Image 1 (cartoon, helix red, strand yellow):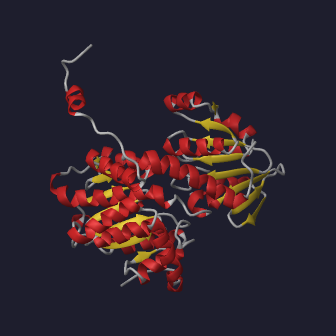
Image 2: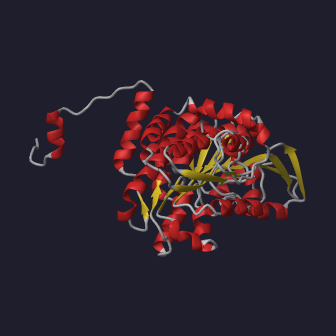
Image 3: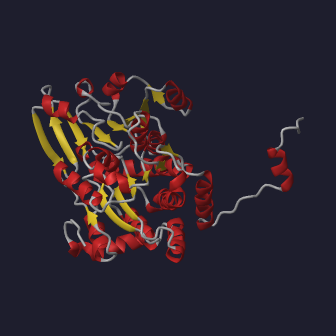
Length: 418
C-alpha cells in the first residue's frame, strides 16, 4: 500500500484519539454498523481530499466498512494531524497522503497521488481535488460518476464551474444540507475558531473589540461565541440583507476601513479574496491580531503585509509578528490559514458527526442513483437530512412529537381556511 505520512510510530496515539472521537459520533457509528452489513459501496473507489483529523478518520472507516476502497489526502497543509494519518495507514490500512506543514508542491503531489487511484467518487473540502481533476488530470474523469463537497468555498467554486459548463459530473453540496451548515458552520466553526485564537494567543476576549468579516453561518457562529465571552463584536458585510440581520441580532455593522481603526482581533470568514488589505493594516492598532477561518489563506493579503513590514518575527508557535514602518505591530495567526485547525483541533467530533453522516449517506445515494443524475451541483435529499436529524436526536436522548392524522391532512389541504 502506498502512503506518505510523517511517522508511523505515532499510530498508537492516533488510534486512541480516533476512538475517542468515535465515542462522540453516534450517528456516523450507526451508519457504519449498517454499512458493515449491507456493503452499499462495495468495490467503489473513493478519492478524498479532507482535513486529516480524528473525525475524518472515522468517516474513512465508515466508507471502508461499506465496501469502498478509499484514499485520502489533506485539504489544508496545516490541518493534518500526523498521528491520525499514521493510524489510518498502520491500523486501518487506508492510504493517506498528508503531512502537517507540507509545502505547496507536496500538497499537490498528494492530491495527484489520490487521483492515481482513479476514483469513481470524489470527496472534497474546498474543491482542490475536483479542480485538479478537471485541469491537469482530465484523463481520470472517465471513471468518475459523482462527488461530494464539504464547504461553502468549495460549493461556490463548483457552482462557478457549472455556470461555465465545465463541470463533468454531478456533485452533492453536502455543505448546503441543513444538518451540516446550521450546526457544523455555526456551532462548530464558532467554537473551534475561538478555541484556535485563544490557544495561539492566550488572550482575554472580554472587553476586546472583535471584528468579524462575513455574517454567513460561520460568521454568525463566531460572532455569537465572541459575544458570549464578553467581546464587543463588529460585523463587516457586503450583503445588505446579512448586514441588516447582524444589526437586528444586536451587533454593530460598519465599513471595514472604520473597523480597522478600532478592532483588537480581526477574523475573516467570507470565502473571498483580500478581505483585509494593506490599507487596513496601516490603520490598525499596535498589537492587532489577525486570523482567518475561511477555507483558503487568501482572505488576508499576506503578500501586502510582507511587503510593507520592516521586520517579521515568530513570537509564538502560531503567531508571526510583523512590524510596520510606523512601529506598529500586526500579529498574524496560523500563516493566515484556518486558525481552528492550524492552532487547535478543528470542530468537536459531536458536530462533525452530522456533517460526515451526510458525506457517507451522500456516497450511498450517488451509487444508487448516478445513472439518473445531471452534471451539476445537487442538493442532499431532504430525506437524508431528516434521517440524520432524527438519528442525532435519538443519540442525544431527545424525543419529538409526530403530526396527528388530522394535522397532516390539514397541512396537505388547501380548502380549509378560517
